[in-house]
Amino acid sequence: MSNSSSLSDFFNVQKGERMKTFLLFMWLFLFICVYYVLRPIRRGMVLDGLGNEYMPFVYMGTALVTGLVVWVYSKFAYLPRKKLIGSIYGIFFVNLLLWWQAFQFESKITSGLFWIWLDVFSIMGVTLFWMYANDLFNSSSAKRLFGIVAAGGGLGAVLGSSLTASLVQVIGATNMLLVAAGFVAATLAIFLYIEKINEGKALTQRAVASDSKVEDKSSGLGKAFSLLASNKLLLLLTLVVCLERITPDLVQFVYHEVLHSMATGRDAIAALDANLERWRAMCEFVIELFLVAAVLKRVGSAPCLASSGVAIVASLLTFAIFANPLIIVAIFHVDEALRHSWFKAAKELTYTVTSRDVLYSVKPVIEMFFYRFSRGFAGVLILLANSVLGLGTTGVLTLGVLCATAWVVVALKLNTEFRRLELEALYNREDDVTADKKRKPVAV
Image 1 (cartoon, rainbow, N blue to C red):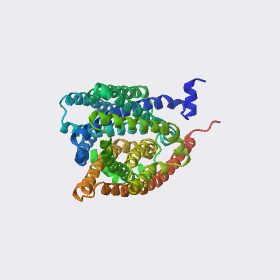
Image 2: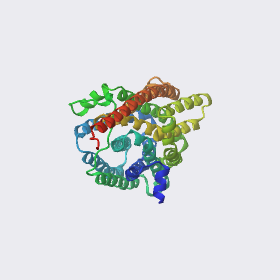
Image 3: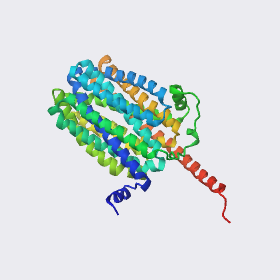
Image 4: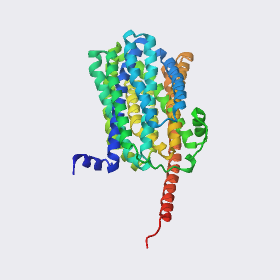
C-alpha cells in the first residue's frame, strides 16, 4: 500500500474524494497564506499611521464597501461557477498589483483604505471557497473532510505569518504584496484545475430538508433576502455570523492597544504580530487536522459553534479581576484559533442541508454582507462606549461579555435546528433510495 493511500485511510478519505480534498486543501492553504502575509502588514500600517482611535470609522467603512460589493456580486451570481469564481480571483490578483503601486505613495488614507480592501478580499475569497467546497461535498462527506480541508487554512496561516515575520524587515512591507500576488495566481490555477477534472461529471447529490427547498423566481439581493427571511436555519446562521464578527472586533480593539504598547513602528508591529500569529496558526493546524473531524463525529457541532463565545466570556471576566494585558493577547489568539478551526467547520457544515440555490445566492449575503455589516456595527458600539459615553476599555469589554453570551445562546439554537433538518434530509435520502429500488424491474 502506498504512503498516500495509508494517509487517506488514516484520515478516512475515500478513493473518489482524495484528489478533490487535496486540491481544496492547497487552495485554502495558499489563500490563507496570502491573508496572513498581508494582515500583520495592515495592522502595522494602521497602528503606526492612522491610529487605533480611528478604527471604528474603518470598521464602518468596511460595512459600506462590503454592502456595495455584495450588491454587485448579486448581479452576477447567476453565472456558471467557473466564470464567477475565476473572474473574482483574477480581480484579486490585479488588485494586489495596483496596491503595490499605491504603496509607493503611502499615506494615512491609503492605510485605512487598504484595511477595508483586505477585509473585503479575505471574506469574499473565503466565502467563495467554502461555497464551492459545499457544492462538491454532501453532509456526510463534509463531516469527515471539512476538518482536513480547513487544516489547509491553518498551515497557510503558519507559512504566511512566518514569511512576514522573516521578510518584512528585509524587503519591506510594500514588496510583500508581490509575494501575495504570486500566491493568488496559484489559487486561481488550482481552482481552474479542479473545474477541469470535474468537467462533464455529475453534480454532487444534495439531500436537503423540505424547509430548505424554497423556490423564488426573483433575482439579486431581493431573492437572497426573501429566501433568508423564510428560513429559520438561515436566520439563526445570520445571527451567529453577526455575533462572531461583533464580539472579536470588540476584543480586537483592546488587543490593538496592548500590541501598540509592546512595539513601535510599522515594521516592528507587523513582525511582532506575525510572530504571535505564527504560533497560534501552528495550534490551529493541529486542531484542524487531527481534532475537528473527531469532535464533530463524537460530540456534534454544538460545542464547536459555542466554544469561542464561552472562552471569550471566561477570559474577559478573568481580565476584569486580574487586569493583566497578556490575558487580552491570549484570548484574542485563542478565539482566532477556535473560530478558524472547529467553529468554521461546524458552521460550514450547517450549509450542507440547504440547496444549491441557497449556496450561491444567500450564503454570500450572510457571509459577506451581514458579516462585514456587523464589523461596522461593532465600530459604532466601540465609538459609543469608548468616546461618546467615555467608558473606555471597561465599556468595550462589558459589551464583549454581553455579545459573547448571546453568541453562545444563538449557536446552541442553530445546532438544534441543523440537527432537525439533517435528520429530515437523511429520511428524504432514504425515501429516494427506496423509491428508486421500487422503480427498478425485478429480474426473473
